[in-house]
Length: 348
Image (cartoon, rainbow, N blue to C red):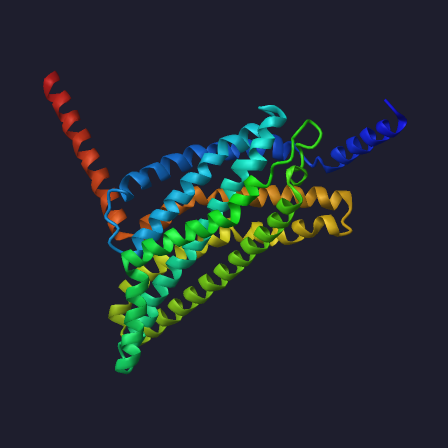
């Protein structure tokens, strides 16, 4: 091999080693955590899907929650690939599969779930604040508030909006899989960007900007909705104390649950993602890059934890889901009690 060829291989090797920020945390701790939330998430979302898809889609809220279940199940599908890759299984070809397909599935499902959280919060805001406020205003204002509420809660409108949402995200994220089409080998598998075509790099950059903008807009919507509902509840409490406790409990359980899950799962990752995205163009030292990568991987795990926390939202927000779950659990306990009684009688 020529000297130039040796220099090229050596420089590539140095670049690979410098860019390999793996650690005990990413190679052993995170795979175990992902495995645990994969098992728990499949169990919880399997039960949620089993109950939800026996519930008629008779309101916008139910439609939005059902789509969140679908997004969580799709995200869960990508977990085994991530765990296997972090454990060093499958070789470089598995990493190529992750770059081209499962990472795209993971992030597209995550942002679909974020978007539906925003829609649910907006629907709750219109129901609790705008609808109640419009009842004490003029006829024109009342009609406007009620019509907006009816639109957001209408099942047909919600289904059409859900279809439009999935189509939009498919259009945004699917090209990231299609345009990651450069030949893969044992030298370029560590960096997904090296597998992208020039158009793929531009599309990837555009999808990052779109997803980051979507997150921050959704965060503003959630904060605005929760602050408005909290203020409305406080004002209602001051006016009619005896009626406010029930309103307070229902509204806080629903909107507050979404806000807590959103801040736990998604805010840390997106705060970390800003400097991480700018890292290639920045003057960060190698140590800073290493620490930032560890932080990014840790906060990304918090985003994945969303699949285990979303069922709490379903239970608190949807009365039909809660009643169906409790009814099925009580039925199982009753059947178990009858079987135990029958066994006891047979032994006597």
